[in-house]
Length: 280
Image (cartoon, rainbow, N blue to C red; front, side, top):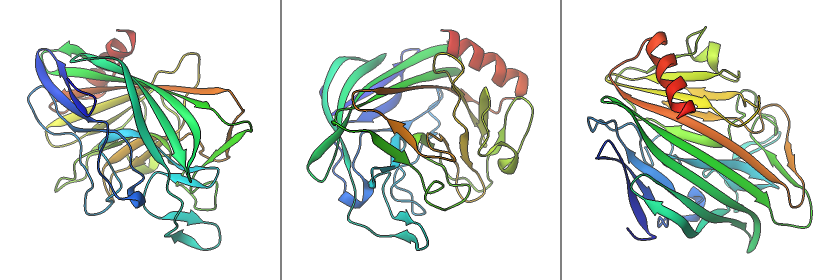
């Protein structure tokens, strides 16, 4: 183990590599990420800097607008102008591991832009064995506003681009010849599940299934951001319709638990595994 990268394991098998200090150009909004992430049978379920979106970095946390600073990567959506290349990229910097091992870690990070620290983060990630063909990635991030003023978090949607409220936890899945199936407990298809909250959401590829649950304490569930036709990716929407304000000194906490399963699950199988993962 070192503080540059570490390998997560479940059921005694490596299932994910976490890179803390990637060497990336500024326009990709440098940040730690998990890649590759695999099933227990070693099937890859993440993609890194694909040709369609070079700023998609496996699994991690990304926010496209923190007080006008881009922590997502790529172009910035500007109202009445559209996607625009701007010199406004921030970076998430690894500070230290409070705990680390093959079963997970607790990490401290700093979110900085234009030479100023805006937020600190405590990130807690666990790899949990569920069955002989499924494990769970339990990912919690706690963002604290370290400035003396309120911070406003936004998205392309809040800046004028409809149905683009992405920002928060994000998982870029591998692109296959056929688009993955996406479904929740009661509906199916990208149009039906995108931009809506749901207890859980499943993304199923040729021989793998991801089942994501927003498991933050209480009843808080952000809408899901979902893409399958253009590219396979699922994330949370911290600023879906309106900007999210974090007061000075306050902390924003979100927990996403993702089942990583071999094979394609049906609704009953997905629901059973995600219940087990969230309660573990």
